[in-house]
Length: 132
Image: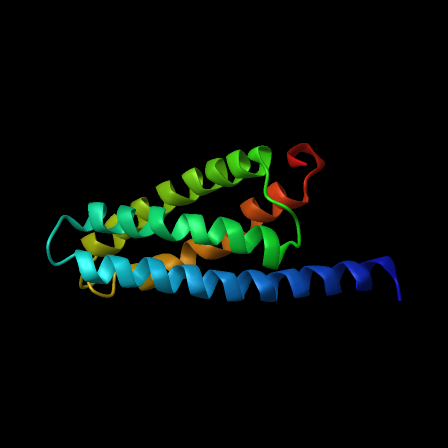
């Protein structure tokens, strides 16, 4: 087995675990958004869902996806990566809404665009020696 084969195997296993955590976190995020967007501004509802799902996402990403411990550096790195991710979410949510997608379904294309970017950011935080 070559180094490249080993690297691809590690990345694919990590990506599958990331996808599982992502589906759970995205489901929580969407459920909260869906419950709230009827009674408040969509950006506020989206933000509340994002923040609440963030805590669960951090714990599962550390322990399940990357098999690491949580610490302050990783927490800060995760927060910064998700700060960038959140800005992308809000930007694309408003673009999708502007394009006429109904509020109930607007997060779905946003998730498809932003989640792969988030994987790269979060993987850096949990794999980099800087955040150990």
